[in-house]
Image 1: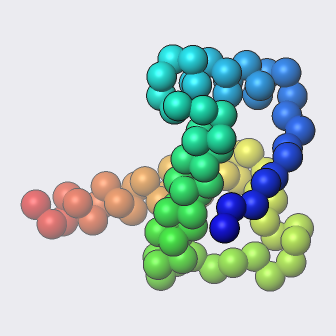
Image 2: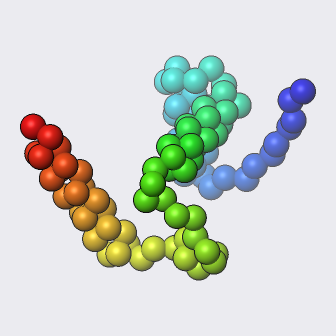
Length: 88
């Protein structure tokens, strides 16, 4: 059984939704939103399967300042690069 969900979006987001739908990427706004939910669900599954993933203990732990995010991203990318070089 389907449920109806109403959402409020900014003008910019609405333009993106309209453009994606009109360009033929999705047949309707609903299909576009369902597609985003599916992708988010798959991403969540992938993160939960990783050993290093640890969910935030507190709500504030979920927020990472941009400079810290970039530092972590660079660190994770360097570990991945090192591992691939060792494997070759």
